[in-house]
Image (cartoon, rainbow, N blue to C red; front, side, top):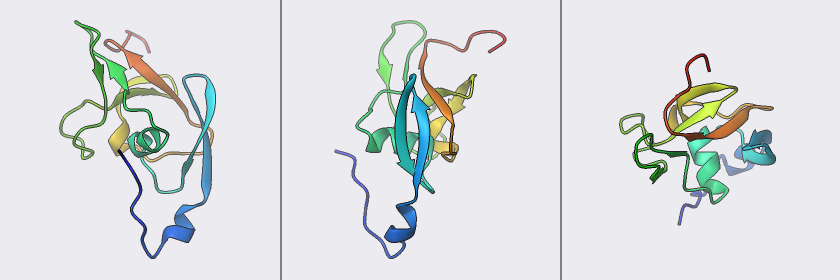
Length: 102
């Protein structure tokens, strides 16, 4: 359901950014947030809730709902919709709450 809208800067946005998602190689585009890159890859789940384990995915895309929490470079509870994708970034699906010391 998620798809990119074409714009005048579309050619510039096609600069590929390589990152790791749950231990596998993935690619997004320059200017993408982590949440947008995950949605573009067809991933609609970023985390599972701490109590029930229910899947959650990006919802508001502006930092209000906290449903896009992921582990980025070993740090949990990062809002994927507010973090720009970087070359070599390591992104993991967050299972439950953030672990102490991680």
